[in-house]
Length: 132
Image (cartoon, rainbow, N blue to C red; front, side, top):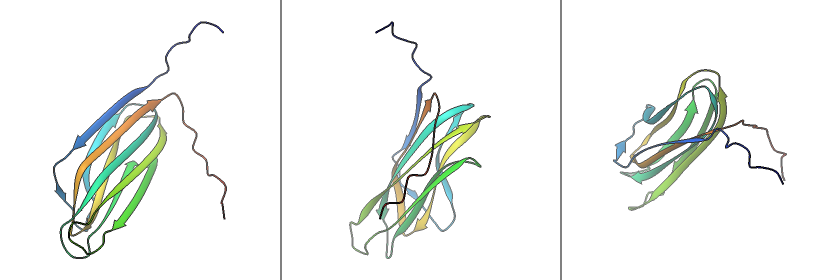
């Protein structure tokens, strides 16, 4: 064993908004965080609240032109039906960029929105094998 090495470059940036945001068929930015050049892991979570018949929502977290992840939920047409959308990306950016959570939908509200971006030393993102 040797001496403890230096701590790596890790910073955590978080942003949240618990207020309800009504979504429509057009993409709406609900949260964002500006980051400097470097490597990052970003995670978003949006609680979906039913507001009428046939509620649905799609959300994405993205670093424009670098990485994007989408998820979608259609809620049961039952009063009190709620759901959760989570997304994550890993990316390296050579320039400052903005990580954004966008949502769109029908008869639903986005509430308890969270975005966390973690700066890391490096990222590797590779496809895993298909499993049948």
